[in-house]
Image (cartoon, rainbow, N blue to C red; front, side, top):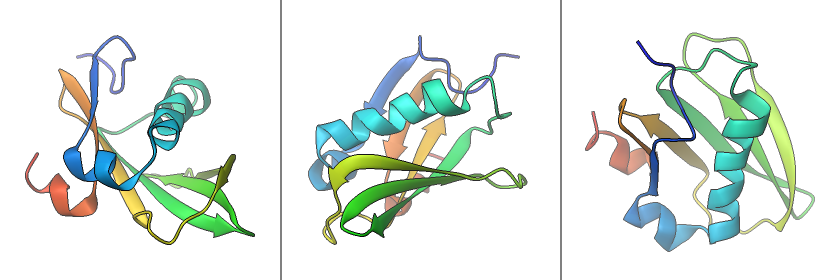
Length: 108
């Protein structure tokens, strides 16, 4: 059995994500997974990222089911209330996709 979130797999962002987040924020989520989480936290196949207003700047808060591990990363990007409040990263074993909460049921 392979580990979840292998950076050598195909990576995608759903239409809803591409329509609601700038590319540099989408890229930042993949970077957080690769550099801050992978190899440090035992990752499930579904990760939750909350987008938080931190004095006008964007903070990304990571959590996952059945884990007490949480982490917040401050990013140098301005926060926008137009951003979704939460996004998911999903690994189906072949592809990895960042999705909106409304899109996750379409993947499972």
